[in-house]
Image (cartoon, rainbow, N blue to C red; front, side, top):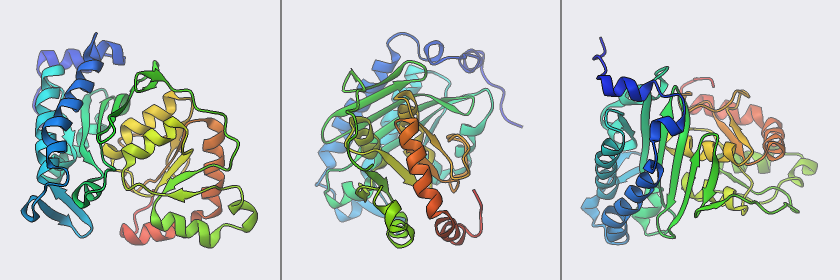
Length: 305
C-alpha cells in the first residue's frame, strides 16, 4: 500500500492551477535554481571530463558525473520550492524504474527533471546540451523550463499563461519556406526513402541536434518548425510540448491522441507551434507511417503505441 500523503502534500496536490501550485515568484526561483546548478555542476565539467567521469548505461546511452551531480542539486532545490512534491529525475529512474509511475497518478503532482539533456554531446565536447524541468499535475504538464546551458537561453511556460523565450513573449516570424523539422536518423531515412517527390518537396531540411531541449527552443525561436520522435521519454518532452501548446500549437502521439507526459514512451510524438504546422507534420508522417511503426515495433519487442 502506498504511504499516506502528508497534509501539506495533500494541499499541494489539490491545487487546480499552476498559479495555485507555484505561488508568487516560484517560477523565477526554479529558473534561478537551474542557472545556478548549470554554473556549479555542468559548465565547470564541460570539456574537462576524465575517462572515469563517463560510463555507459546501456549501448549508445552514456551518463556522466555531471548528470548525477546536476540532478542531485536540482532535486534538493525543488524540494525547498514545493515541499512534498516528488522529483522524477532521469538518473533516479535509472536506479529506481518504478519512479516513472509517479507521473501517471491521477490528481497528484511531481517534478520531471532532465539534469543534462544531450549528454552524448556534452561528453564529446559539443556545445549542444540543455537542462529541463517540468511540473506535472494530474498527468498533465502545467509549468516547464528549458535552459540552453552554453548560450544561456531560457524558455518558461505556465499553462494558460503563454510561453516566453529570454523573458520575451514568443513571436515567431511568418514562414515563407518549406517547414524545417527535427527528426531522428531513422525517421529522416524513412522520409528520404518513402516520401513521394511531390510530398518531399513540401518538406525543408530535417536533422537532429541530439538534444531535445535545444530543438524545442529553436522551434520557439522560429529557426525550425516541427519535431517528430519515435521514443518519448517524459524528461525530454514534457516541458517542450507544453511550450509549443502555449505558443499556439500542440503535440500528438502517433495514434493522434494529445501528447501526455504519462503516455507510453513508445507512443511517438509529433509537435509544432501552430495547428497548421502540426497538421502539415502529421500529413508527412502519415505518408511514411507504416515503415516507421513497423521499425518501432521491432525495436520495442512488438509494443504498439
